[in-house]
Image 1 (tube, rainbow, N blue to C red):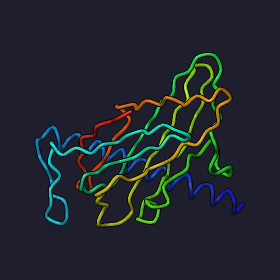
Image 2 (cartoon, helix red, strand yellow):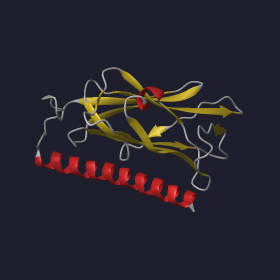
Image 3 (tube, one colour):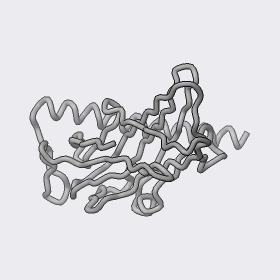
Image 4 (cartoon, rainbow, N blue to C red):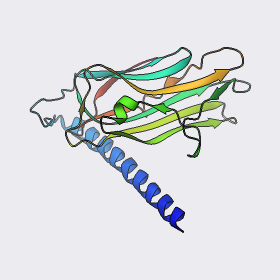
Amino acid sequence: MENKSKQLAIVLAVTAIIVSVLVAVKFSAKQQQMGSLAPTPAGTQNKAQDKATMMLEEGQAVSLKLQAKGLKINAMAVRLVLNYTGSLDFKFKDEDSKKEGVQVKTSANLLGKGWVYPINKITIDDKNKTAVLELAVVNLDPAGYVGQNEDLLATIEYTSAKGEVPSFKFDPAQTKLIAKSGEEISLDLLE
C-alpha cells in the first residue's frame, strides 16, 4: 500500500510540473502576442531579440548542450526525434533501470544548481520507425538560473553494431526555453 501511495505522489508531482511548464509556455505566448516584456528579478530584462542556442554534438555519445548567453532561465522542454528505416541499429543505455522506459544521462552540474528532470525518456516506436527523446527540465531555485557558459543538459549513450552515430533532430514545435519572467526565449537549434 505504501508503494502505491509513493507512486501516486510521484505521478501527481510530475503532473504538477508538466502543467506548470505548459502554463508557462501558454503565458509566454500570450505575453509575446501583447508585445509585453516583463522584467526579470535582478532588474535585467530578457529582450525578444535575445537568443539562446541549443545544440547536439555527435560522437561516441550524443551530447545535448545549451548556451544561455546570460539569460535567466526557469524551464526547458526538449524533444529530439530519430527517424530510421529497417530495424533500429542503436541500443540506448538506460541510466535508471528502476524507471519505466530508457532514461538518458542528466547533467550532474545542473542537478547541483537546482534543476530537476521530471520527464526523461526515450520512446522507440517500431511501427512509425522513430525513437523520440523527451525531456522536461525545471529550475527550482526561486532566483532562477543564469547560464553564462555552455551547459551540458543530457548525454545519450548508445551502442551500434554498425558503428554508426544516431542522427537526432530537434522538434522545434516541442523544444522550448522559458525565462524566469515566464516568457519564451528565442532559441537557435543546431544539429
